Amino acid sequence: NTPFCYWWGPTNTHRSWERGSGKALWGLEPDDLKGRLPGFLPDVHDIREDVADSLGECQAVDAGLGVLIQRLEEIGELDNTLIVVSGDHGIPGFPRGKCNLYDIGCEVTLAARWPNNIPAGRTVEDFVNLMDLAPTFLEAAGADIPDTMTGKSLLPVLKSDQSGLVDPDRTFVITGRERHVGTAREGQLPYPQRAIRTADFLYIHNFAPDRWPMGDPQGLDDLHAEAPSAEDLTGKTFIAYPDMDASPTKSYMILHRAEQDVQELFEIGFGKRPQEELYDLRVDPHYMNNIAADPEYDPIRKELSTTLMQILREQSDPRLVESPCRFEHAPYAGPVED
Image (cartoon, rainbow, N blue to C red; front, side, top):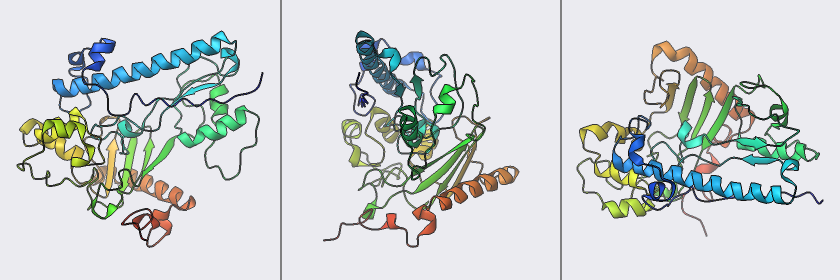
């Protein structure tokens, strides 16, 4: 009868995974995905297979979760246990995925089960952040939530019997990025970004648009430069654009980057980005058309930018309140000093 907390951290959905495993192990036919990939990915077999393999790893996680649920049932604790399933970032090894502030890089599963406490069968549209989980668990356990926590407990949302938007204050989420691979750029510099996502819009502020968002290209920004082999691009992350995990998709897009059908998508995924990005997700769900400079959307851009910067200042984000910013210097960036 002793209370317990168990953290399960499967790495299945992290690179690398066996090529062709989605079909071999889970019966996922890659070409069934034809016409279903996001618009920023070339719709070719190699990339469909990569996506199918990723989905297979998701099913492997589901299977592992099933083992844990079965064990809880065997010991009579299933209905007395709060189960929360989530993740820390989006799909790796794909343009705009992990290490980006677009939906495919940030959006993760959040599912919760706690019979007699959480009404089942609902889909909730409130915006939440991983930081919200810690105060949620503390409140569920009857413990005090420290004042220093900036996350907000999800328990009122979870215990509600409503679907859709439950908490009227949860209409947006703030995301940010500084550094992923330390050596991705010369001088070990970060790629600082902050973003605000609402139901209809995604606004991103890139603080250093002169830098390469996916890491230094090692000459591959020249569309006609000789590229490493497909094998190396598939297996060696640091060979070029190190902030994107090595993968068949990364390999395909680099090797075919000069082709007419791939060139624009390569630039979207690997090229430099302007200081501001704005996407109307109602008409552009794959965030392909940056409308930050469109006069029609200027009021929206200003509103989202103002809200984002105000919250960052309230939270004392070093990018806004420090000059020079600590993230540009050791120990966060640059060579480590003796």
